[in-house]
Length: 297
Image (cartoon, rainbow, N blue to C red; front, top):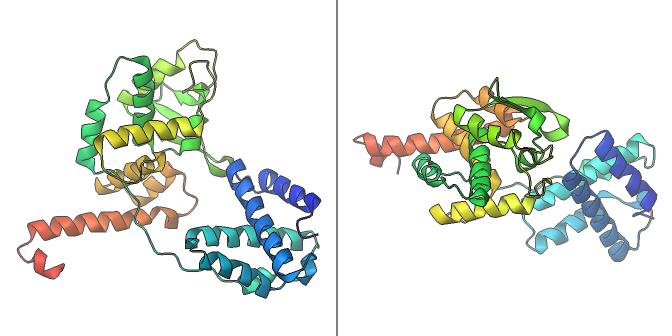
């Protein structure tokens, strides 16, 4: 059967142990693969892997597009299927890879949403409260903005990975890749409060019971704070990551340095922030140059 539980289970193990993908990514891949094979079984009555051609897979993708599924989601499903077929070929479970004839739809390039520097300063100046619950929320927001770490990296930040003496934190990123991020004295003082707490937790940021935070908790914090001070439609921890990178670039940081701080595997992933920088320069030019309004129209 196309959705053979054994093959799927073995592939899931492969993703986690060899590819080192996150649980979230692994789950998404498995859902994508099952969705494709269920469609092919229903529409074409094909239940054997070797009988699938690129035509059936293209039909599956076409119906997704007809349902107005965005290109990003379709491309992720293509990536899932490509990874699965590479696995099947490697283990000689199929002899032909139909994904070689499948192309990904082009995605419209969207500039990362970020908070303007003046607005971020205003937000940070207002994040001062002695209330312990407000303090945790404020400190999480500040940490995300000042380090650019991912949501998962913040949640998994252990006390032992906060180096107060050297003002750095060690972060475990994607595919278990570690990186060191310098922190400001302000953030050092914030983190020291949590590292020195006696809540019997290994996590820097934890619940009142000392348990690891969950993603929705952090999302809610960021959404509430951004909603109070901004009108952006997108309010998420990743916006603070984009803000961190954009502010560094706008203030003269080298792209390679930003790449290392963000934990990107390739420079191409970091280069998207140059588009924001160019837009920023255009606005400055348009306002400052006598002919700026003519040239840039």
